[in-house]
Image 1 (cartoon, rainbow, N blue to C red):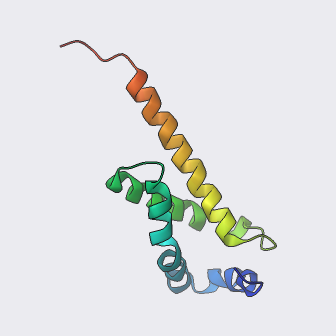
Image 2: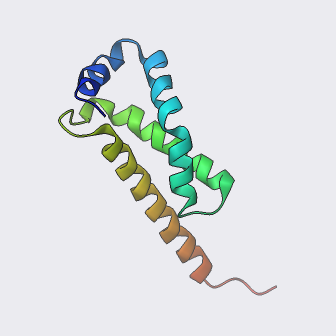
Length: 99
C-alpha cells in the first residue's frame, strides 16, 4: 500500500464501518484464494477469512504504519492457515474409536 495508507488507517477508527468495509472489499477475494492454496475446503477457507478480518479489526490500532498493510494481513492469514493445517493433522493422526 502507499504511504497514504498509514494516514488512511489511522483515521479508520473515526468511521469504522465504511472504512473497514473497504478493507474487506479490497482483500476478501485474494485472501480466500490464498487460504484455498493451503486448505482446499471452500467453506473452511471462508471461515478463516472471517477470522482474519476479526483479528485485523481487533488489532488495527497496533498496526505499525511504517510497514505494508498487505504484509501484515497476509502474515495473519498465513499463521491461521498453518494452525489449521496442524489442527487437521492432529485430528487425522488421532486414534479413532472402533465401532
